[in-house]
Length: 398
Image 1 (spheres, rainbow, N blue to C red):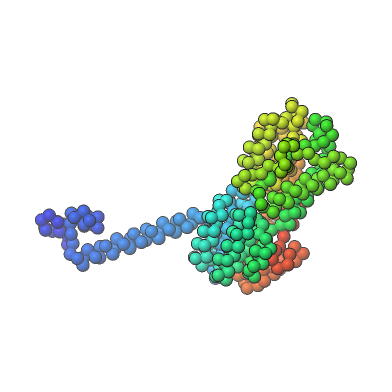
Image 2 (tube, one colour):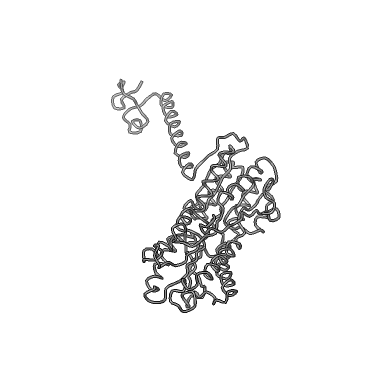
């Protein structure tokens, strides 16, 4: 029974809630009041649990049918917005689900602090294996921090794609790296560029000065893949040109001692390349007889960003005003541009192959086997690394 606070008379057909009690509109016997408060607290606790679960789900996607009884693995991506990484994620989601492995995906959105916090949370939840596409490759600190956390709980770690040094990986016997021979991508791109220019030199030499001016877009400072691609993409092209009796490439801006333009945000983004290329085209053009005659990019995203600016300015639209353009990754968008004649070529980085290797290693760890058991031994480097081979893509016989 409930009673009016003002006159002590019984209140009928009215619910006396905690809110009304707090406003001193009614009161209930002490025992009855305690029961009401307990019910309200339980409802609030249930609501909080629901909100927390919803918040956790927002950090990424989950998968697997739960047939594995070895616990959940956690997969950390440096950003979902990277086209190549998205291809790896899509492939790995299917493979993990097919194997019945429970997993949780996390998107760091290019922020290392966010990723480190995600790792800490996943381990606290009882994650049994970490698969990490580390954000910060400029130093060893981020990767080492992740290893230290995992090592305390005896949880294996698989780093992939974004470089982690051997000394860091080898500091933990349950850690490996799945990547590529990052120098090879630069070598292959440079050789592809050199061969193309030897076969099409007069066409590429727009102002007829006997030299080819170029720009190269670098994805990130301090990243080993970006460093190698930037270096060898030009050096190896020059070797091919020199062997054919042609002059070496010349960077379009003689005042730039770096001889590259870098994405200042380290995102290897199309937006950065579009901005750079648009600025270049405001000053350099066929009409001014100083047009940049070759565009090289560390990845396809940047190549496509440059292509967008070129097409806006009237180049690479299927006319005679085509600037040779090269990338790395062989994304679907890049392959489409190549088929249309808007790009010359790219280096295929096998997203499906990388996802397959990661998933196989994860299964090996779950089953208590050695990390590289059953994988191609010709691509392994010691006990710490396995490389996924590159291949060239020009649209011809690919």
